[in-house]
Image (cartoon, rainbow, N blue to C red; front, side, top):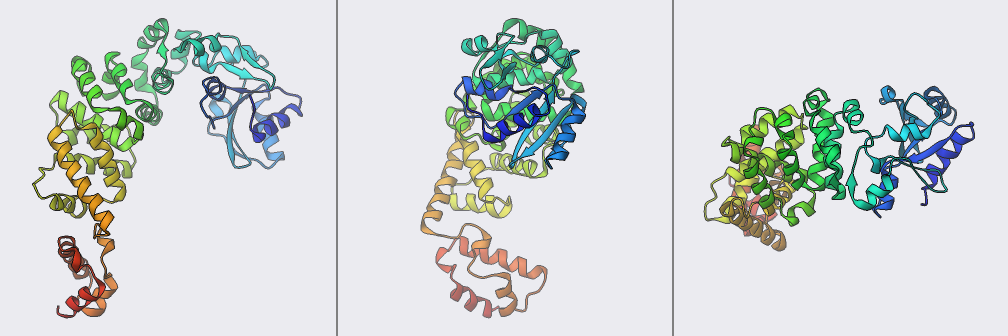
Length: 405
């Protein structure tokens, strides 16, 4: 296993101070799975304060937000590495540290010569099994590991050990006490890796705990059916988080007979979605609820002019539409026709967005007596006129027109 030069350098710096340092966790797992990894973590018996002193001495930037777990984030050659002090009662023993990690597939260390495995992690990787070395301690120490367990199932397509799974379910209620940002981060990773794992969260009653007021488990068979229909291989391949969440909210709203926007608004508020993500998801839901007339140009105009779609929103919509065929074939066809209209306009260099108008706000000021809000109103009128008459989006024609106003 060849380590990046910056990792070798950091290990060397720690060893020169008389301490041990090992590569641990996900990078070793990914190496054995032949997955490219850029996530390198180190474990050391170097005391926390001495790690900080070393970084100060070498003028390395640090992040000490993980001080509670004696973890230091270190920036070396523009690369971010997390260094954690050995866990357990004996701070000098790597073996004890490895046994306290979440799952055996992550409880591996590399010393530059070979892999150190004290929990059977290599065997579990070969068998494609997710197993906790000590399940009760694993989930009691950090209930978020319940979601991490499903995240690794989504990422690696592994099976979950039966004893590990049954023990995890005993600690589900403790997820209510985990910082919501950490929960959201795991949900994001699950939806990006393999949204079908949502079915496992539902049948294990975990969605009930996470989504509280929405009755998911009582009708999880219907949810599983819709998830299987919606998250097609083509959609999953795109790894579009906005599209994946929008589809999930529609599925939850459908099986519980709740308005999709109501579901989305409450859940996005609970999980503290960013303002940008919230607005983009709401645009997709509005596009989904829109009653599309026959004129595909009018449909595209509505999305751009009335709903404020930009290029990213359209990309999200067309990706999202990959999951609609078996859930709502009528909406799927309507959105697909909008996509065809968009692609045709793009190919022919026709007007699509208001910023593509052949005149600017400054032109409107120079050639008319319009001021302030009137400028924006007139620009929108010109946009509509040119959108449905592509030949009119010409600088000379529009200026001639402005002079008549």
